[in-house]
Length: 156
Image (cartoon, rainbow, N blue to C red; front, side, top):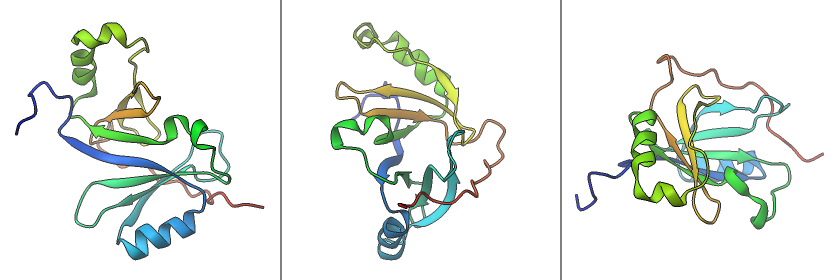
């Protein structure tokens, strides 16, 4: 209630974490903490699942595993390690950010795109390179995005 009404979001929808062993992570987040898998996705060039979404009990909030066979060094994790802020309308959020005085010092482009999950989103980066993903709560057509059926990455 003490946050300005000019804030871009009121809700952290998910956080993306890097995971090197999906079954081990699922044993922890699923079996120990009670999260449930609800969706898998993959990048267009991948032969394995690229991410797995695990939802908190009785909530729409979730953790997004960013899957790797070998985890990158902490200095090389880039945009996979991220937080996602839910916004009702990405275009309105972009317009608000474009109108902000801070925009003059933010030199990256602000492009709205549709993700593999078929939701409109906008990626921003903080001064340390951490990705801040703004995402609408629903898909562009209201239908759920199909889940990937590819296998999870495994060490050979």
